[in-house]
Each structure stands twice: as C-alpha cells, then as structure tokens.
Amino acid sequence: YLGGLSALAADPSPSVRRLVCQGIVAMLNSRTEYLQPHMVSIAEFMLRATADADSTVALEACEFWLTFASLDEDVMGNDMMEMVVSLFPRLLPQLLKGMVYPPDKIEELMEANALDENGGADRNQDMAPVFHKSRTKGHHDDDDDSSDNDDDEMDDDDNEWTLRKCSAASLDALSGLYGAQSILPPLLPALQEGLGHTDQWVREASILALGAIADGCKEELGPHMAQLHPFLLSQLTAPESLPQLRCISAWTLGRFASWAVDQMHAEGGDTSLVGRVAEALVGRLLDRHKKVQVAVCSALGVFVESAADLMAPYLDPIYRTLMQALQMYRTRSIMVLFDTLGTMADYIGPAIGEGNLPGIYVPPLLKHWNEIAMENPFDRSLLPLMECLGSSTVVIGMNYQPWALETFEMAMSTIEACTLVFAHEEDALDADDEMADPMICAVDLIDGLVEGLGPNIAALVSGSSRFSQTFPNVLQNLAEHIIPGVRMSVFALIGDLARQAPALIEAGLPNLLSEAVKSIDPTHPAACNNAVWAIGEVCVRCGENSGPLTPHAPELVQRLIAMLMGNMLDDDGDPVTVPGLAENAATTMGRLASV
Image (tube, rainbow, N blue to C red):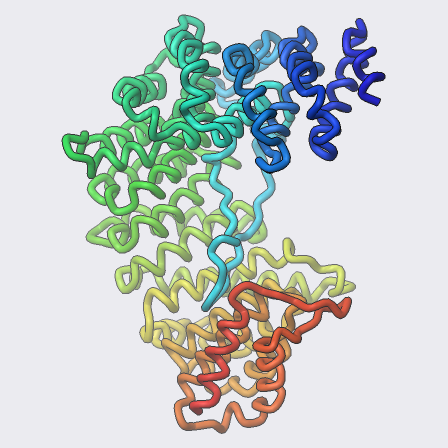
C-alpha cells in the first residue's frame, strides 16, 4: 500500500496527490507503526506537499502535522519526535505562510467589509444556532462543564475547514507538544518579520500565529510581551486596521489575558495594564463591522474570566458601552454580548450590583426582552439574555429588587407560552429539548431570583397579581414534564425554594416529592442529580416532621441504595456511572435518616 502511494506521490493531478496525502494521514492516525520505518521520507514528502500550489493538496498534507501532534507520545516514540523537530526550521515558517488568506479569499473578505460598512443584512453564517447551557446542583464534576467562549476558536468568516485554520491548529498543537524551546527559535524570525510587514494580511496571519502558540509558549514569550502586547493593542485600535486585523488582535489579546493579569501582581509590573486592555476592548465594542463586534465582545468575556474583580473599577463605562452596543448589534453579536454579560456576573461577582450599576444595564435588558417577546416569545436570542439575567440576579442579590417582579412575571409568561405550545403538540413524544429551551431558561432565571433574593422571594411571588395563585400548579406541571431538561431545572428550583421559601411549595409537596422520586432515573443524569439534591433539601426543611416524606421513603431508599451500590442500570442493562451522583445520593440518604 505504501509502495503504491509512493508511486503516485508526484502525480501531476492534484486530486491524486490529495488522495495520497489523505491515505498517509489515515495510516498515521490508525497504524502509526507501519509508517515508522519510512518516517523520514514520508515527512519530507508531506512537508513539500504542505507547500503545494494546490490548496486542497496543501490542506490534506497539513493534516499530517495536526494528526501527528495529537498522537499519544508512547505511539510516536522519541525517534519520530526528534525527526519531526528537525524539520521545524522549514515546517514552522511554512505553517505561518499557510495562515495568510489566499488572494481569492481576500477579495471576498474585502467585499464583505464594504457590505458591513454599509450596514448589510446578516448572512447565514452569522446566525449560529443557540443552545441553552444546563445547570446541575450539589456535587458534580466541574470538568464536564462545557464552554462556548470563542477564545479557542480561530474564528474565520465561515465554518469551512481551510488551510489557514489547519495551519494554525497544527502550530497550536505542535507548540503544546514540544514547548517553547523547540518552537520559538525556528519560528521567531519569520514571526517577527510577519508582524512588522507592511501588508496587513501578512500581519494578520502573524498575529494569528502568535495567538496559536500562546498556550504552549506563554511563559517563554514573557520577555517579548513588553513589545508584543502594546503592538496588539495598537493593531486593535488603529483606525486604518482592517476589520480582520482588529478581530485577530482582539482574539490574541484574549489568549494572553492571563499574562496581562499577572503583570498586576508582579514586582515592577504594569498595574495599569488591565485598565488599558479594558479601555481598548471597550473602545472597539461599537465597531460597525459585525465580525469585529463578535471578536471584541468575546475577547472582553475571556479577559473578564482572567481579571475577575480587577475589572471592578471599569464597570461603569463598560456597562454603558455594552448598553449602547445593545441598540446597534444584531444576531450573533447580540448573543455574544449577552454571554459576556453573564460572564461578568459569574467572574466579577457582587461588584456588578453595587451602587447604580444595575440601573445602567438591567432596565435596557428587560426592555429588550419585552420588545422581542412581544414579536416572538420563542426567539432564540432570548436564551442567552435570560441566562445572563439569571447569573446577574444571583450576585446582585437584594439590589435587584426594583426589577424583580417584572423579571419574575416575564419569566412566568415565557413558561406559560411554552406550556401552551406543548399542549397543542399532536404527539408529545416528538417534542425535544430545543422546543423547551425558553421554558428551561425561564425556570433557571426564577431560580436565580430565589438565590439572589433569598426568603424575600415569597413576598415577591405573593405580590404578583398574575401568577401568585398559579405558581404552585406551574411547579407541579413542570415536575411532570416529558422533557428531562425541564425536570432538571424545576428540581433545582424546588430545592432552592425548600431552602429559602418552603411555604411556596408546602401545599404541593406530596406531589412534587412523588415526581422527584420518579425522576431518580440515571437514563437522564442531570434531572436525576437535581431530583436527588432537591429531596435532600426538602429533608433538611422537614426537620423532625417526617409526614411529607413517609409515603415516599421505601421507594426513595431503594433508589438511593442502588445509586450508592453502583447498581443502577440503563435501558440496555448496562451499569450507569454519573459523576457526583453517588455523593448527592449519600448526602440525601443521611438527611433522610435524620428526619
């Protein structure tokens, strides 16, 4: 097979050469040992092919380096590692060249830039799908949490896998594998030349390369950052910078966010750096180009994750500018804005609720929600809006009271509208989580109000002329819902109500407990986890009054023991292991025993 590939390696047809590269990559990925005796000649061929004039051949060849860097180190062995690193003086500059947009793409991007300048309509690729991020309670594995931040996306103008993206991903992976000692000496000369190039497209590619090696070479790049960081800020803020140059500068600043924050604590470090980065990013939030809006807003979110409460002195201008952006953003830009607001609540903490800050951003968010909901209560741009409000209510706490009733009633209206839609579904079994996402977000937002307002949530619900009487029935219907994600969220809410305002669930507690016990089913891990946690919280509130729990105790104990013993089985009869579930089960069993 390898002999046949070798015979075709110099074929004049690009399609044949592309398939040769594809075959070699497949062999490297699945049966590396067959390539090892011939690795020197194969790697030389793939290096030449990475520079092939035909971009499809070059892309398939570039996959070789990305695949190699993804292999287990015991599979590749020291000989292969050393052989590949010997190619770095030629390979790394070639990867850098591969990151420069080709002429036809540059022409396309320039046309898109002109369209953006004139306020062009959103394109299909701007309107990415939106998915709700689920919340689990009690013990759970934080490593399983997913993040949709854009900091690790070398984001181009579409989702096509290109030579540019593959080259950047390969450099990223190789720097992570080999580290700075092997990467920087052969790369820095070409990188420095590119960063100083008069052609903005070459500079853009070089900044992408700098961001690609950030994780693998961050510490060793430290001595160079005193020059590189101001350069990145200048490329972001310069009026003459291309939109693509502004985008990649913002992304790369996000990749080096931890370095900037470290300077605040380092002896002799620049204590003004966080403020200057914040100022530069905020100054670009109102850019007319949608891609710049997305990149800068994403980078601000990434920077907040690293800087956390160091951002507190700059919150007033940040929130004011974000609310200006709310008036001009569309589609993806506005959803990234909501994500960034949620990140600010999660990482900066109570500082976002101090003084008059909530008055800057909460009323415009509620106004936007109301305007969109009047047209379409199921608009998926409302999902990240409700999520960011949910995160904010938790940390703002009692200072959120001026808007709490309006927020509660809008969330309940969303649940009401979704319930009507499900009621008219001909076949409830055809319903999916996506249909229920607005309902789930609304429940999570009410849960955020419970966490933020504490016992005061009881007075809030009682003060709602529209929903005070129906609230217990709504909880019951949600606990019985066919969609596991809905049950997951409502059991989180029920558990928090048991902690903060048990009177709100007291009347319906027998039915709520019955549904919670039924949901202790590992087929739906998140709903199962939250149901177990909620029952534990109810146990705490019951104290020595075992009455509400007595009818459910035998079945509950049986299910908890199955979890503790690892005897829970899925529909196929296989054992089910859910991270954190056994810990929650143990806690609930102990609480049940104390009632």
